[in-house]
Length: 429
Image (cartoon, rainbow, N blue to C red; front, side, top):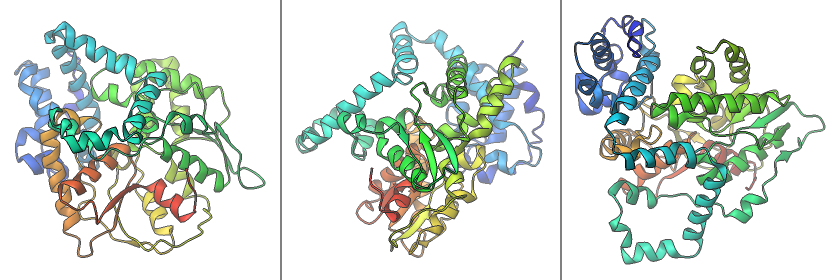
């Protein structure tokens, strides 16, 4: 019996409504790189009309942004079809991988990404590299040219990483700044987010605190599993999901809040992930009902804005927050609530920037072509923005690289929504 989501492919009527929403179809102009083209390939592979190898390129080049789902008149479950194809291809490719590559892949997904202690060491190493002047020396001597182009490109726009001493001083409990807490919040820190952008997590919790929430960071939480799921490692994703559900069940939180579009989407899809385990479905549903983006909570409360910000701001939304979490209005509401902000809508903002988890690392050249299309939208604005707001660390780095590639890094600053709100409230990490 095939593992591909064959029944779901039958809902696609090949109408083409998905085509204008698909970044890879618009960028590469090939039918096989469109949602309906990929669905047809999965259908034929399930029927044995083509081999798995025949659909590999098309599936590998999909961003997984799921914008096609928002346009589909027959409600095709593209995400389920895609994930089934990714999982099948991952198993198929794994059989062909050399043992050394298998070991490296296992170390990355089973040891490095989910392991907080290893991530702390990596974060400390990056902070040391930046703060001791080694980074400046590396740039001055040109030694970084030995790196592959993708790693070299992203090294140039790395955020300033907090050192281990500052991170160790971060509180695990924030008492509400108001006489009575409006909500009790369990804060989800994420993996890459808390390694590369830990200051944004700190700012997020301080914003929630000032808005009247009691915030707790529980030590038992772990990786959400998004990167594993996007790489076809569904068994490991389920294991990580169960750990997080068990961890947060021990506490009486009103909400589980994050500031990471991609992780938030994964946390919200735990019920679908565990739908073949009856004993877990109800627990997953309760967990996911509480899991929300920080903008959802802040949009219900009042922030203590202390100064107006005279910026022209545009917003690049996270695909997974828009298309999976279905949170479109809350981030915009928060941006427009800031005194002094001049908000400028970005043309075709729904188009993916090309980040898509680690897509921009493993498929760098394709990702850059998609990013170039996105930057055309930024440059098409009649009034150039001084700030691009994002709500996801991957989008953050990608848009920052886009500004760098277009020679706009001096004119345009890329920030997370939380950073902009914190600046307007005079809150520092």
